[in-house]
Image (tube, rainbow, N blue to C red; front, side, top):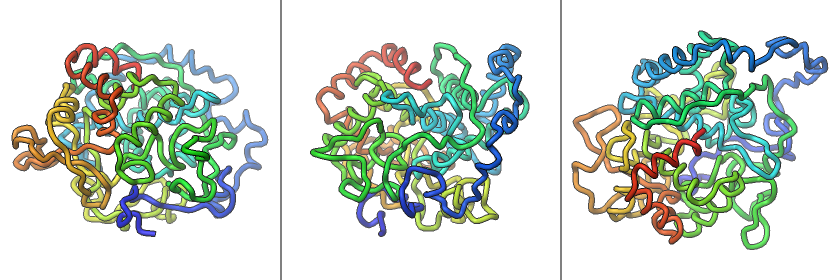
Length: 408
């Protein structure tokens, strides 16, 4: 099936063989090492007496913050930073770590650093979060067990926003890592990634009743489909999915708007290339690509050839600055439905002056159209979400005061 032609999210890597309740069913050729876990305390790399709370007290938090801030603006040849800043990358990496939380059973979330393991490391929606974790590796190595991966990823997000200009509320450590995949979390019964409603094993019944305890709309997505319900753009229908999904994550409408707009104030989406050239999901990658995340052989595989959501472009005029640009562009300009170079549905402005358009992520002499997703347009088209959006737009301090709790 070619999802780029049907208007659905273009990523459709992998397929299940039978049931989808276990990692081995998604990747049946994986080596089963369960026998090595029968003496669990001996397989913990930290040892039986390790106490993370005590180790965290030894951490030079200010030095760590300084190192993270330095990382935000230091591009590397291996993975160049959009607009010269990693703020957007680390915001997204933390979003997708914390965004698996659901209140019905308290599972998921940032508190175990589980994004490092299957199946989350191979969810289509998590493409390139592996690059964020790899960029953090030298800092993790420097500070060792004094900072967990769960804490480090969230702290990197906080520092990303501080570099962009947001005054954060502080940081609370205490997220203890796991060291192998969690096999007792029910992520859904689907037999393929991003299975549309009505497919075998999907999580909806009735009109559009989402199965408990699930929160995300599809296997392989963190929140909702950014292109629309089942990849069909319709902001009002998407608004209903957003409301259900984020309420399942214990968030109110106001918190939901703050999270969405706050996250989309920095960074950009990536879809300037051909989806079909990407390699398989990391957990099922060829041996030469194991440990390197999604393999993209298209040109450099990064910079202007970076592929993630399939959607392409920045949301704001200045994607490295904390400002009210998201609401300014969303509410004050008209947007038309179009497709990205990768074939994903997105919206672009029809009446925006050149000076309002963001410069290219790597060529400051060129300006590009910004874009909005169907989920962004829902904040404009849904009456209740619009009221909140207008309040945030008219009171930037109020907006800034609401964003931090949502992102940590």
